[in-house]
Image 1 (cartoon, rainbow, N blue to C red):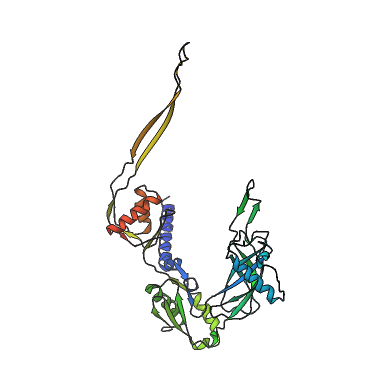
Image 2: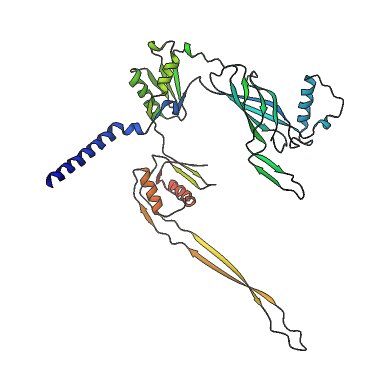
Length: 385
């Protein structure tokens, strides 16, 4: 028995040693993220495209005469370009089967002519629904007024508008009806030239600027490609030189860089949404030693209507009348509040346990965090959205 206990004891000790060594060697890796998830390469970016178009084929859910004057002008201009000249009143053309829309799309980097993009279609006037409509050929331009794509195709709104509506009718609506998507409806006509093969260096732009993260990013690159290859310029930019062996193979070099792991650091922050009662605490949030007391005052008013019924009338008399007498009861309840001392916390879990010990709801937590920030006990930035 003693021999068996000795073996078990030694096994337990060995397990604890292995766990300790594993936590030391791989503790930072569990919190690390790839460079491609925290930043982008300078010069490799999306471009916004926009255009004005018309959606046709609507079932009398398009633009109305009042508020849709520019729809009439656009329709007349389109017909004139097609060689159709009308002498009728232009207002007669607006049959509520057409709608003016703005079309937007994102042109990704390295997009080549012939590739397709998703186009977002949004109503400009007073159209009720774009259900069943078709977007006519719409040029999509960049801020330099050059056309980089053209969009056309059926509009998908991901919902429906049903029912006759009006007096005596009911209408059922699902999802937003005044906007939709043309999946793959935009065709790239012109590419944005990005000549990465002639680059001598690259710059990594961090999405959230932080000096510590920038230094760690440079250290991770230097550990693989050699010292001095990466230099942090500021909190949001790391400049990386191109090794001699990767000239002409810049894409391969960028792929290796964005796959490296970096331990991201961020300032302590508490984000509060007062409208929904949502509270998000960052990893480095700490509390100084403080005392917290929180309680609520509840006033309840209950009204009961009592009916007083008179006895049957006697012969020769009019008798009494039935009366209603209200019985109002007001009750005041004050929740018992305790003054609780919260010790200085070290981890986020300690902060959560300390606040839960007070027994507050998320909305009460908003008021407590604001008071803690004013008292200087909350060691974090408090952001209210």
